[in-house]
Length: 89
Length: 456
Image (cartoon, each protein chain N blue to C red):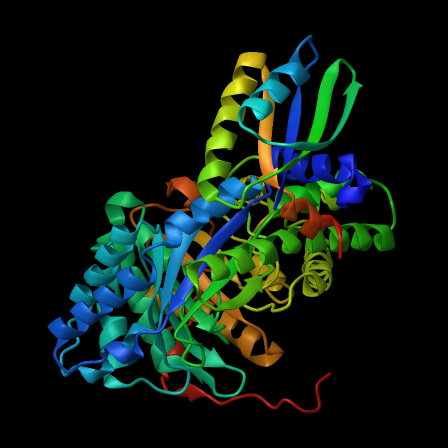
């Protein structure tokens, strides 16, 4: 399973650094990153390699939410399957 | 990102649907067959029923939470439907139905689901002793439980309408209203009278586990009126072709999420996947409203001229989009038009735009029927039976599911409000035609099944 991390919030220095540091500490490999800034708002999407375990997923999700709070942005971790199901036949 | 099969826009579109347009999976409902619990001793029967429900549904809520977290989408309700209780308890001389309902309530609470459906009887052609005892016990059973939902199928296109049952239910609905008078007769929100009831409906209050089903099965109800409305905002002023295409594409996307959740839940619980119910189910939340879709389509209020056509379009396009998105579609599948549960419908009723007669016309072209309508508490039982008979006739003649869930709000009348709270919402009390149908209802017997050839 691949995880999709989305980050949305007001742009400021250190958002990518903050998220990527957490991922490195958690031993999660980043496969791809895409980002844009529209009207001062930061949007980022990352594709990461995820373990199958629900526990690992749950823990990382909690850590990312907490990290997002500290950075003042909204961070979400989701399985890529929901997007694939919705947008690909 | 394309090497991973996804674009930036895809991902943010999905998340906007969830965060801004209330996209959710409305319910994961586990259907549990209870025929193997039959026993002549009602106490033994209740123990077997409790054991089977709590064993089969032990992990249902937890699995729902895991899936919700993994995909980042709310799964609002986890529920259980059972084999119609009147069949299960027919093995007992004295089924002790109120006690049976309290056992269901306890089992539901112990596994953490918010509703359990199937305190039901199928009486379209006649009532067995067990059926009659169950219907007689509904006021006591529902008033003394929190999570138990009841339904009675009184008609089908093949069998006609059992008017004895229709007459009895008119009286029982009034009894139930009186028994729950202190909470604006909320008990009636948990009783549905059906024509052509589906065996695999995951939505309450009408869910039950049909006799043709597997032992245990997972059915999922998707939702998303807010997503449809928000998509339609982008095509204001465009013609009907564009309107229909937009609804269809949105319905496809919503249903794909439901299919994913259903498959995942079935896999994790090791239970077969039954069906996806494609219904657009509103909630009292702002923006999660069918009536607001009508507004977006160009009607000032739900109930204005054009509403039936707008609903017909919506219902049909939701099906067309959803059918390809799921391998098995069933249940009610269409647009729900409950009044109290839909803020836009409540506003329309308050503005005087919605009458029972207009709602009845709307039920000809959508799934289900007269739903969550507060009527005066002094409405005679025969008039409630008359409303049921009219709605059942629409279902019978048009070979579709119709239902009645009206709430005669005890001690209140037109101009006052009923407050049910939570997902059940609140509603202004709508007037009922004051003229009598007593002699018509008192005839008793059955209405024969209609001719199904020579349709025009």
